[in-house]
Image 1: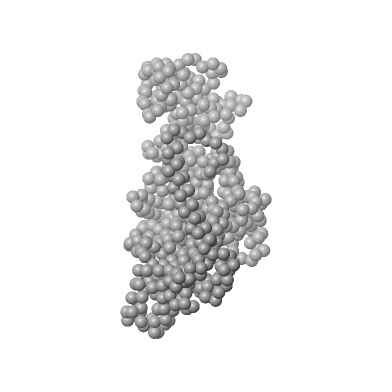
Image 2: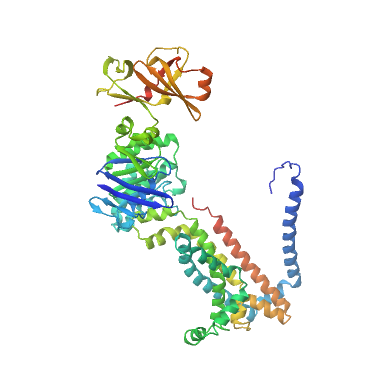
Length: 270
Length: 350
């Protein structure tokens, strides 16, 4: 808020009361929930729970799967987003819309669709011949990947959209081929956007539950990611453990957002 | 050196049709025209950045029509320069040299000498984000020249500079050109810039070349109404004879009207004067009577917020422009006698 006193013009006050009232309401809502969670447990038991074998396993599994899923998603999303941003081809709008479907679709539906796929002849051939996904760790990665890839493409597309083609054109005239220009001009220009997209994608993968639980199941110490751990511990009325995991997820999310702020606040190019 | 043969480009509803241009080795060629005339598209076509449906482009006796930009050896300076923000000045200039795979020492030498010529040596380690408009322009030119291109393409190089910087850099640009002798194609919407820089120029309008010639040819012999209008429909006076007046002055008599000019070596055959540089007044102006005449108004035509007056002086008719409000204040009618003052500094001589 502005520190200098400004005179309110007549009629502005009710509007300010409504908008700032809504803001205050939602902020206090979040704070109250966090305080309630904190009141439920004390630091000591919280640390004991976090150090438990099960939770440590869930932390490791989540960090591993989310990182692999994000890495794979970025590898596919960077060229795909570039193609849809700079390319001019027939059916571009349709493809653009299809890519948005996973963003608005319920993750459970995505998980269920994947599960059904692995029950078809092609799917079971993949299962037996290549790698087991259903109720296995690769299933978690696949579920996370499917949910986050569209988000990654969407974020990266807006990054590439913001890059003036003149840079690439100059790069070409300076003797570089199209792919060399992509590596030496476009990617450096997109660096901040790529980091930001990676962080958001990763945070989304860490929190993924619906698709994961449907495809990979919720088996303790096997396919138990952090969100799955919350679900399992609530189901067995082990509320303290669930609260501990919630705090871990809040910490992960906050860290990701702080990193994001740092990256996007860095002076933008031009 | 560079030839465009029947170049035709179509982008949406805009089309560039049958452009034919031949630019000689070492020439400074300017393409001038209003916004949307298709000037940038011609540059992009030469650089290989624009696909076209018909025509050929030859550079240095070689057909480059189907070559990608990276194999054309062209120095391209786009509007707003597009310096790479993730590299400092030195690395921007070195960017193209790295690709050529020359020895590091040799690259360094080349960058240093270019920076010296362009007067940006002290900026080499700076971030490009901290440069002024004029500095950016020179860095962009250095980056383009580093790869020893066969031709330098400048797209509105003064477009984002303030008037004074632009004036200074026009002189500088001429100096680099004289020093390096590189064939240059310069695109601008600014007629004054075009006349000042060009050895020859092409006037482009709506995707068509209206006229190609030296600035003098375009100014004194405009082909067609568009060119005449674009250069400001100057009064062009044929001179009968000249007298040397001494003191660095001469008198050119055009249609019986004696006009005083600074002394020129060559005989003056034609004079050109823009209508906005002919001052009209109903009262006798004070001061010495140089380049002041009496005339009779023969025609008055309103033109947006201006009034265009045709005034007969001796045997010649001069076109003058007046702002509407001043015109009304003076209450001039056809047949009235008025005083004219010709702005000496704006006279062009051929």
